[in-house]
Length: 569
Image (cartoon, rainbow, N blue to C red; front, side):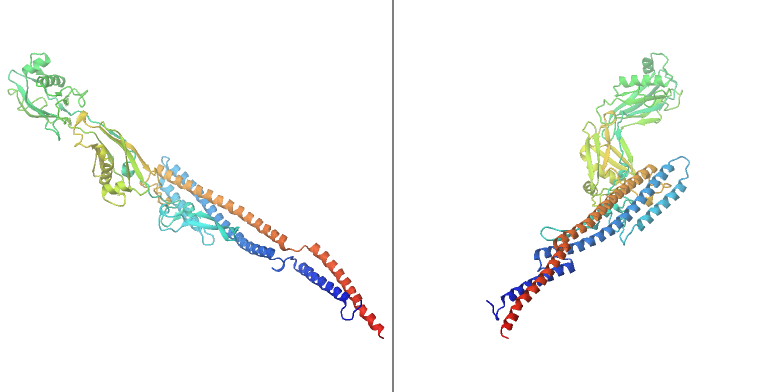
């Protein structure tokens, strides 16, 4: 059927031509843009993913720039730290040289001063973009300061839930800082150390005592006649805690001399014979003493000596001769007594075991520090006593843990060791350890022995000087102490260099990874939205052919109308 109202063939050919045109427009758009998906209408899911990833890639590109900046900071800090290591090594070598005999320390000190100035110069110059990882500005000492973190951007991350975050690597400037405003850098002293604890560190006191005794110079010889005599009183074992036993009217005469010496002439010719006579006199009168004591006089033929036997039942241990009288009928001066009339040449009465320590310098027990020691008195057990900030403040009635002088240190030690019966006193800069006589009143051989030692501290050692405080011409520290301190700084600098070197390596690896990540993301986006140019060019050629055929088809369809018109001519 042929209709002049509806040309079905032309309509169909026209519809085909429209479709081909639309497909050609799509192919041409993909070829001209290179994109298979140009807008959300092309493929909403792929367009959304690709757009998001392009945004992420821009952020990651910024991370690459940040990593470059971080690498520069780390490189500068590492180079400066390596130079500090070299300076400290040289510093240590000069200190060793200063130990040689005959070396001019003043000249070495000049070189050390220059090395110190160079170290400060390096620290000040170790800055990149206004950031210096070797110099901190904390107003407090770094040991009392929270971590000083410097952040280095290292990654941009989008999690599975769609949230984004920037990852950073942290550098703790407390580890890398050589100098800090408030102190505590690698080249600066630490706090919390106890030093030599005012001289108490290293104490190893063991003390005992012995019986009371005295030595006198023999002033003989002398011969006793029938009426000649020497008479005296003696007090044995008198002391602070006892009156002792008194023996009065002890007499040396011719009968005693001859009996003691087995002679008939009443003559005492030597100090040794004087001892024999005195021993006989003491035994005859039950005096708890002996004339055969030799602690002072052993080997000296000019001395005789008397010592306590400590059997009087008194806590004291002493010998005291007094009220000496004599009569030799004019042969010797009045009061002459073969040496008994003179003060003792040597005298050890009421000895109590003591040990002393010389106070050196004040120190502070910080809240994190403590020290401890062992103490034993008499037959009691040896116990360990600990001193911390709380102990110091309780003993001294303070709140700062400061021990400023010998009296303060003695008070603290006595407070801590109170259960032991140890008495600790101070006089000037001398601290004396002894047994508490109210608990242990016995003197001499029976006196309570004392032992104070095994002094330890926590921390065991700290750096007590800055690098710029090293002065080998002064007396603040010994060369060995300086050597130990500088080596401690050197180890800190080496540790810092190791940390910075590790950070450099990590930054380099992260930069490589980030560059590869950017390329991978670009490729992933391309797979989602890029047009296949081979496919689209072939498709365009096919569509062009189809377009030509559709046009011809449309011409053929429209030719039917011409045929109908010819029938009416």
